[in-house]
Image 1 (cartoon, rainbow, N blue to C red):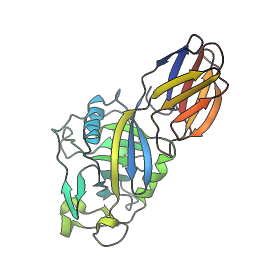
Image 2 (cartoon, helix red, strand yellow; image 1 turned 135 degrees about the horizontal axis):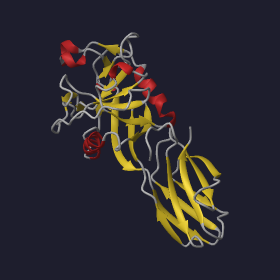
Image 3 (cartoon, helix red, strand yellow; image 1 turned 30 degrees about the horizontal axis):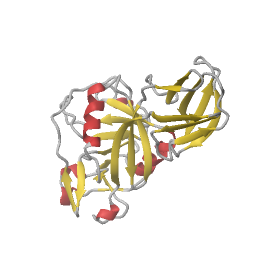
Image 4 (cartoon, rainbow, N blue to C red; image 1 turned 45 degrees about the vertical axis):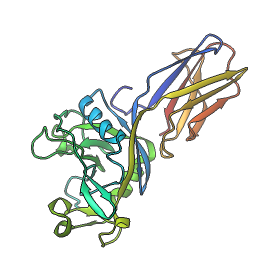
Length: 273
């Protein structure tokens, strides 16, 4: 996958011979977020920020981000940066507790803090990022070159980030400490049901996982994404195209082509706008 992701996300499945053997292309890395306001996917950028992507993946895939909260939102300040921040605190029972962190990682600044991007949060030291991250709800050029942007929300998933950004913010610092001066809550009481929770985050390659063929019927299966990232399947008889869309708006993680060509063919998956 080539950055920046102004291009669609795609992965190609190369089929050779009379559709008898399949060669699977390596897929781009996607973080799947499940939250109380909806699910969405983020395309990660290991080319621009390899250390940050590996760091985030480590936390996500060991469950460190499960049942964590968005503990900071600045969207109520129209002349400030517009971000929502998480990855630092988990809900255990009725207690909010800092998650255990790995050693800090170096700054990998370079990609702009445009709307919908995911970046590492940090303290004053540029090389102090650990587990916390933030989403840019709007473009925040004042953050450029000072924070590591390492991903971008895919498709309609930005609507979930916007919904998080619209939750009212309260000052809970007297109860929880100075970190919680901009805590988003669904109601003005500090109860678990009022927190904006991230239920889980998992990182996997977006890849075709299986291909079978019987006669003129070919079945493709891939790593399913959220309902906010529908997939289009395209087919061509040559790798250089032209490509023909044969299915759109798929969210199931599978598709059966009942009119597969008898010779060689190529399939690719592309995220819908």
